[in-house]
Image 1 (cartoon, rainbow, N blue to C red):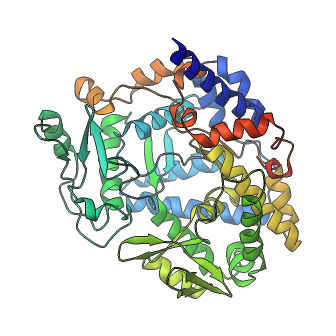
Image 2 (image 1 turned 60 degrees about the vertical axis):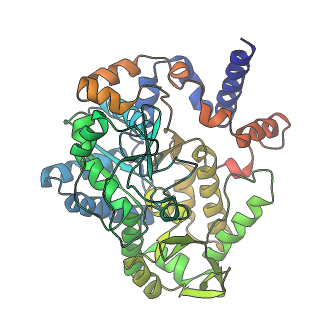
Length: 466
């Protein structure tokens, strides 16, 4: 009982910290999770926007349109996806690029469908980060799948071909092998799953998972909602589109006039030295470098993107060099640049997991501080300051032990009205279960301590753009 009480207290502490930083959330704790999901997908109020934002949204819609066509979606569905996205401007960015059967992806998509259904939407766009490693923890990550408590090797890769390699590793040959890690774990369920997945080889693991999810979506979820999944290759193409435009904000402000880029990097360093440290780290400057299938960090030094471990100058920080390397996928935008073109510039609400409610507002702050230091784009800063809930917790909100694959095998389509109705009426505070992704994380414990001690507060300048 003491352990249960401690877990409940830890969960309440996390909910308290979230409500301190996001006061609008508190009234939803006692309401059905459907109400919270509805708020997440509520369209922002119409207001005048700066030209920078309108152009960025146009480019994002072009990327969505191109991705829809490339994925073979009907022309009418692609048009509807773009129309509803332009109106609603909400993007689920929480789950990494997992198979839809992975519980943390499956239940997050249930939450999204729950919110969209309250607004009568028939389309859904999700971004899944694909720069992550195939193995994030022992036998955990996109390269692994758990069924009936047993780990399954998705591509049948050896440990040496997974450790240190990401979803964007390639070119190579990747097939859905679904190899159990333990003996005698093979069964009818895996055989049936193999029959659902594409049988052809793919150049990259990310290509295989995206193709599989296209097949799985109508089988797992309602066929009445058109689904489009973006990943970091789509973001690379979106950034290239910005850089091919001589007058785009990203090209003129960040690449050609590198003062703003330097200001952003300096802002990240200042943040790391202050009370809001630990949430937004400077892993790489604007781009990741892919070499021999591995993801490597870069530093912007005197106009060059440099791999500091070797001192190699990977590319000049110029539009032409970057465009070329984005095309061959040796450069991939980092998280900050992704959020710039996907959310900050076009004014799109970003939903994410247990870290995003902290680091995303801090990204917005760093960008706005860089603009203020450079004394440019006051209209963009004002638009950012006026955004309605620019980001929110929207990933792993629903916590459930039921295995999605088992649910599918036992009852057919797992994402139709049944599960949506089932979860929709559950109170928010109960639907999120133990909040394990928060409770066991030392960062959230430290956050609570800093808030209680007054070392951090929602009135701080760093939190002004949340």
